[in-house]
Length: 50
Image 1 (cartoon, helix red, strand yellow):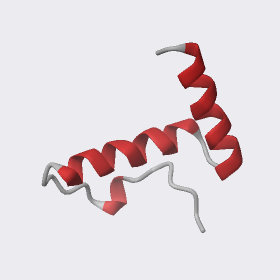
Image 2 (cartoon, rainbow, N blue to C red; image 1 turned 45 degrees about the horizontal axis):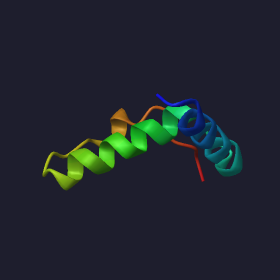
Image 3 (cartoon, rainbow, N blue to C red; image 1 turned 135 degrees about the vertical axis):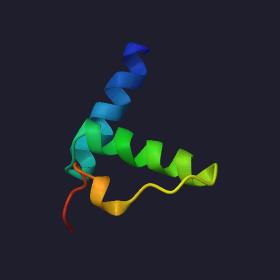
């Protein structure tokens, strides 16, 4: 991963007050859903509680 992209992801996580893992997980879930694959909510371990 390019250092610039890593820094951008880290900054986004800080702004959103969540972890990098949560952002990556959410992006993965969105990609799976776009391809018609469901990802059960109970598997979302890192999601910030709102």
